Amino acid sequence: MTIAFHGVDVARGNRTVLHGVDLTIGIGRIVGLVGPNGSGKSTLLRTLFSGRRPLRGHVTVDGADVAGFAPRALARTVSVMLQDAPSEFDLTVRETVLVGRAPHRPPFTRDSPDDHRIVDESLRAADVADLGDRLMRQLSGGQRQRVMLARALAQDGEILILDEPTNHLDIAHQLDLMRVVSGLGKTVVAALHDLNIAASFCDDIAVLDEGRLVAFGAADTVLTPELVSDVFRVTARVAREEGTGARAMTFHPRTPFDGTRPSASPRRTE
Image (cartoon, rainbow, N blue to C red; front, side, top):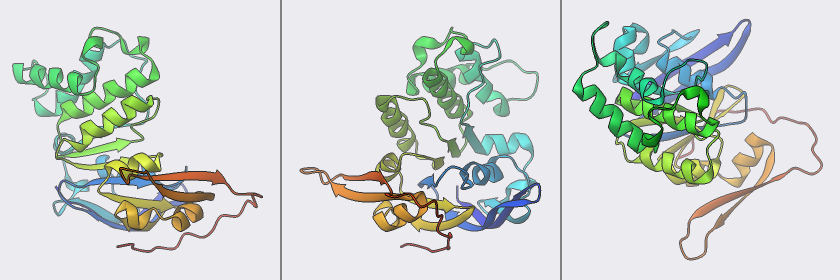
């Protein structure tokens, strides 16, 4: 499914936090949404899965405005993995993942054999099958994060939204999560902090700064040392791994730090 953000402005109180975002994401593309803390990544994702109208502009899926979707229809279309996994409820891991199937059955009906098959597959894909009977509140942060991936997989929308999915995960599970996501064949939008992971697994990178889209395109052309240095207020360098040619960025604090924030100016990088 194709996602399009058309001139999207979003406000919180009297403050505009997204400014005129225009972005089109093609069918089956994996897009990494990157930017400093507070740049608007989570807010932009929320305009897609919440169904709420932005202050200005609109968001469409295959040409249909998401604000016109019934909540259950939107939940069948867009699967979501949020930053923080709930742990205050006495649900088991399996019960939590089964919640992802709710949009696919009428209210007050029993889970079907197909629901349980999809839950089993999702638990295995997220490497939490052995935790099925554990309570969510008994899990570590990383384990809860993997359970929330399983729930999003069980939700089985054609679009998958991931808000900082690698939070709390060790390196091996970060790579495993992105490998699983890459193999789904779905349209994926993931807010990511690790630029090297974003460059390795995403087809395109969208860079937000101060609520504005400042670059969009392939990692090699977008994540340049100059742009990363400007947006993230660091000194960035790109190197190629000997033998494989794999791309890796390194980062160093600016010395001396002068506290300035360059203004974000929209640009499209091809």
